[in-house]
Length: 148
Image 1 (tube, rainbow, N blue to C red):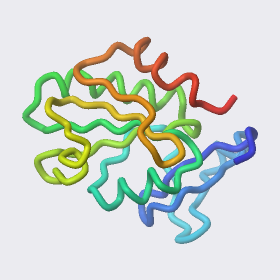
Image 2 (image 1 turned 30 degrees about the horizontal axis):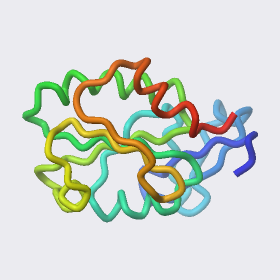
Image 3 (image 1 turned 180 degrees about the vertical axis):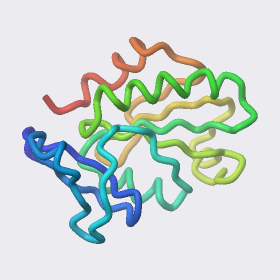
């Protein structure tokens, strides 16, 4: 990926699309299905299969939040992840996997507590944290993996 492009996952077909920063305000669309891309950096909710495809193909790091709707600390972390996504939109993808509905990946990783955060880069886990994290801690976690 060129350092001059940003990467966004299509909300319709899941394909990763590269977008030039100067085109963000032009309502970019997916090159495959032509759906409008969400360039806000908002977290994407995925099932296990979608997550596997995303982390194996993403040209940018993917921070995965394994959570559950009933989990108070997970709800506390959500606004922090939204802010992180906004700050690093196109350079980092924030993904959320509900462990009650989609437990397979969390079980394979041995997740014992939630929220559990796993940072993928190049298709492999490069860092992980458990529990509520501050924005500064999350920025430190991802900063070394982000393109300039």
